[in-house]
Image (cartoon, rainbow, N blue to C red; front, side, top):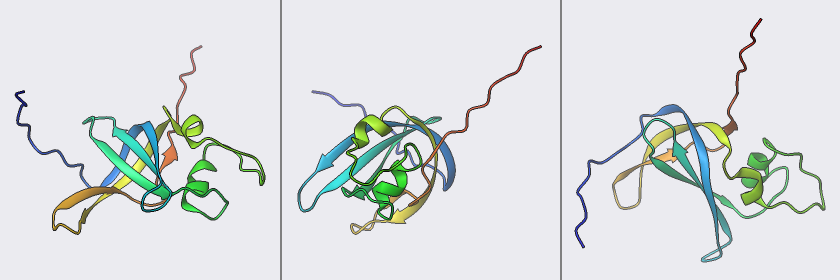
Length: 121
């Protein structure tokens, strides 16, 4: 199989628009929810991770609360709540353990995109 060599893509630090493309859950080495965000202009996908625990004070709970009301005792499916949502988010470049730099979504920066409607007369 031949694979095309492509240029490296990185997002500039700052605010971006995008869409939540998919949600994945993992249990090793601990329960974690990965949120994959596709940046609107470049199509670049950035992964944002949260421990899989929902409360008003957890990272995942704070994110979900921007899209739905959290009620103690109620069950929520993060995939149903977040998938396909238009959002804004902030990124920064961060050095990984391997010494390479990676785009990272700033904690707490994912927000529903503000939509504007045109009024015609």
